[in-house]
Length: 375
Image 1 (cartoon, rainbow, N blue to C red):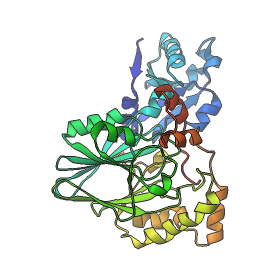
Image 2 (image 1 turned 180 degrees about the vertical axis):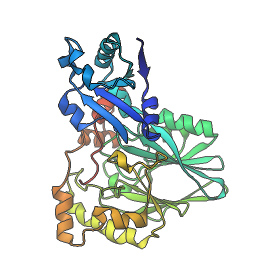
Image 3 (image 1 turned 90 degrees about the vertical axis):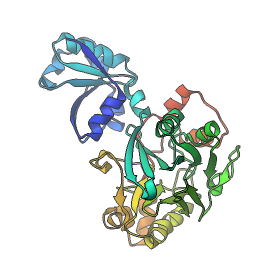
Image 4 (image 1 turned 45 degrees about the vertical axis):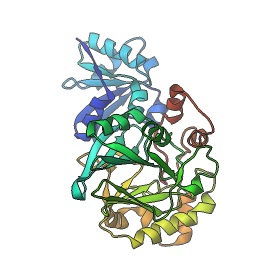
C-alpha cells in the first residue's frame, strides 16, 4: 500500500472541522505526555520508535483497521520508517510532513467577524503552540496584534486581502514565543508599538503603546483602542476593537488567567494582575467578546475554530475571575504555576533585540506547549 504524506494544514483542518483522527506518536513517552497534537475527536497510541525497530507486529492489534493512521515523530524521519513498515503490513497509513516541528509552526487564519462599516477581524490560530495573533482590516488598511515570527504568513495574507499593513502591536514583551512584530513593521513600513514599561531594555526604536491610544483604520474609522492592563507583565496592554472585541493579550484566557512570573517578579506583579482582572475588566461591558493571545486546551476552540468568549460568560465561568479572597488569589497565581516556557529568558532577549538567532535556533527555542497561564 502507498504511504501518504499529510501536511500540518491538513491536520489543522481535522482539528477545526472536529473530525476523527487516529495518531500513532512514536516519540518518547515524556515528550508525548508534555505535548502532542490535540483534537476534539482524536485518538492516540504512543509507542517510542526504538521499540518498533524490530517490527510493528505487536502494535497492529491496537491500531484501527477502518481508518487511516497518522504517524507522528519529532522531525519526520522516524515516522516515515514506521509508516512504511505499517504499509507493508497492509495498513492504510500516513506520516506528518516535518513532524512536530512543522506542527509547532503552522498558523491557520480564521475569520472572527465582520466589523461595522465593512471591516473584518481575523484570528491566526497556531494550534501546535497555542498562540493567537490578530489582523484587523478596514478599507485597504490593516493592523496586526501579537504576531508570531512567521512574518510571510501575515504579509501574504494582507496581499491576498489587498490591504496595507499600517500598524503592528505587541500587547507585551513576549516570553514564550518570538514576536514577528518588528520584522513585519520593517518589511511594510508600518509603525511598531510596544508598551514602554516592558521596553526598558529593548535596543530598537518603537512607538509607545500607552493607555488610551486610539488608532483608526480606513476612512470608516474602525477603532483599535489601548487599555493598560498590567499583571502578566508590568506593561501588558489590552485592546478594544470596534467597541465589540476585547483583545486581552496574556492577561485573561478562556479557561485560565495569565501568570505573573516570567520576568521573575510574581510577588511584585500579582497585585497588578488582580487589579486588572477584578477592577479594570469589571468596568467594561460584559458583551465584549474576549480574544486572548493564547489558548491552553483544545476545548477552548469554538466550533468554527475561533478562540473567543463573551466577557460576561468568563466572569461566571473562569475560576481565575472568581477568587474572592485576595490571599487565596495570591497563593493561586504564585503556587500553581506550570513549568517555565522553554528558553523563556532567551526568548525575551530575542524580543528585546539583544540577540539574533537563525531559523533553526528559533524553532528549537519555541518547541513545546504554551505555558503562559496559571493552572
